[in-house]
Amino acid sequence: MEKYITDERTGLKYELVGDYYFIAGDDEPEERPIGIWGQRHLRYLKKHRRTVYAELLTSGKLNDYLADHNEQAENMFFRLVKKLAEKEGITETLKAENQMLWVQRMNAVRGAATEIVNHEMIY
Image 1 (tube, one colour):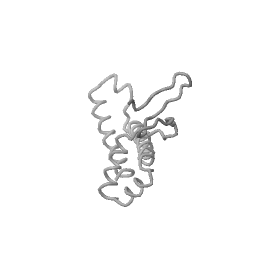
Image 2: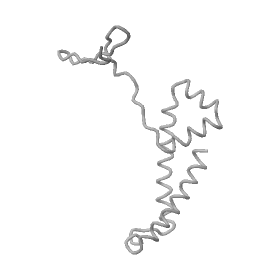
Image 3: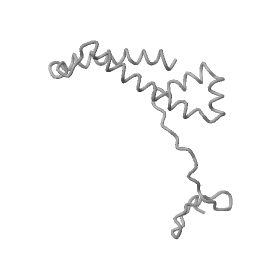
Image 4: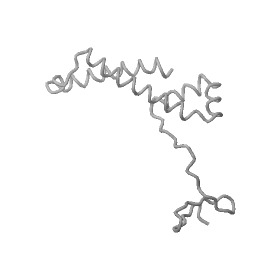
């Protein structure tokens, strides 16, 4: 028997549960993706803050918490990169004139921003 079937007449989707088909609900929350910052914070919680991790996991709030944390860290990272690049004088004209120097300086700025975000939000 198929796990899901759709009634062409009504358009309803049914899910097989045991021996019976029940209407498949759309009430399940959509999981938000967890990016690199969320993954890093998850590793930190598992290793150093086990009670916080266990509480979030058992309450069903872990994914939302990590997705929010990831979004905040990502926003902070992009703001820092922009501000640090402006402070260092890294411009589009530098990129046009000397690409290797621009890449070197931008990598340094991104590394500094990563360290700041890691220190402030992740660990």
